[in-house]
Length: 576
Ligand code: DQQ
Image (cartoon, rainbow, N blue to C red; front, side):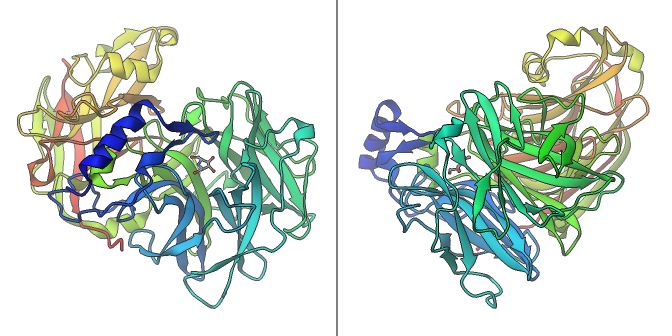
């Protein structure tokens, strides 16, 4: 193996002592800031993915500065060049022509100046007039203050924009203690937008006590920025807002919009990453550029009880407008659920989710997310199943594809809603309900769905499933969507939290669909055509590579029907 006994000893010290908690709530494991040689041998690396973005080794977190420029997609991301844990953060850089196959370059932005000597933290790209990309990022200065800095490509005729120059007048924005802003809670500039008055606006994540803030700055020239008297928006009892993302969505179609678009058929989305809970939640509402205020729609719930992009592992996300294909694309960081000891063994930690196209649902009340269409070029060995009845307690194996690296799209129909259990939902939180009634707990209508990364003896599996209930109060049906990791691995060092959410689908008039992207240690699931998403990290010991199986199952007492199922093996993406 690639790490020595002394490192194991150092690691054990880390568990008890010597871990420094930072404001960004990442731990610093001093003793693990050491880059290891990492094996590429697949038998040593059962959890490496085939088509998700991940560097060869070391730690990654937030996607940064995502953009398209001259037909090339850019993904920058938080990266530790010196270890498998968070620290020494630089902006690593990769480029792609299709969002799936990637080539890596030298880090674009690394600590070098007194205003970013202690870290180059998250930020965003804005395409300025004349097609000139600009990056705003948070620097940690020598006194540990968080400040905002600007960088431009050194050579605009380089199609890959490999070298970036920091603006000589950095820092351009600093925290104002008179406004109650602490210098350790002022970070992650959004993509900027330009109002009809031509002034640029940008939001910075912050907090004042436990009031989460999207602090607004304005500028005429992108260089001199002044803080607006009031934030764009704030949220009571939400704590630090990290990585705010603010963008327009079209009301009546799926087309993406440039970040500066305003108009009567346009709503706005504000997403914030809640440091307290490590979830990305969003509201939909209206933005008034005259007052520079964003007001969420009635019923758009603020905070961790609100709508989440993803109810599993997905954080510090960021969107960009893809002008080549008129869509808005969402990137998000998927963290590990394994122990730091196991991360040190495999030599890497963290990945990026498959980029998702995002648009406003017809209801206007939520977003829809769907893997970018380019992923489909990796599909191979298509198999079909149609009109298959799944009797009570039955399991059916799906064969003919590589079950450890696959794309599965299933739609299910219930037969009789009157058989659904009546439940007082006021007392139930979706995740708790999924936890109490896991995949093995029989119900009437459900659990039914997929068992993925399953061993042939069912000792290991991850179940992504549904249960249908009738609400006691309204007598209306409700669909629960769960991702149950409790049996995902014989290794009990992993976090096996079960995730869950309610899915806004009428199970009487609609089929219940589920698409799951399976990639060795990731199960990224999209319920109801992208209305609810759940991403899980799992680390099977038995269900590895060709020992992994895929099943459809029904553990309810009532039959359900597989209206259709399509599944594909997915080929490896080229990620160099
Ligand atoms: N990660 C960055 C911060 C951001 C946090 C540091 C979110 O800029 O607030 O690596 O994961």
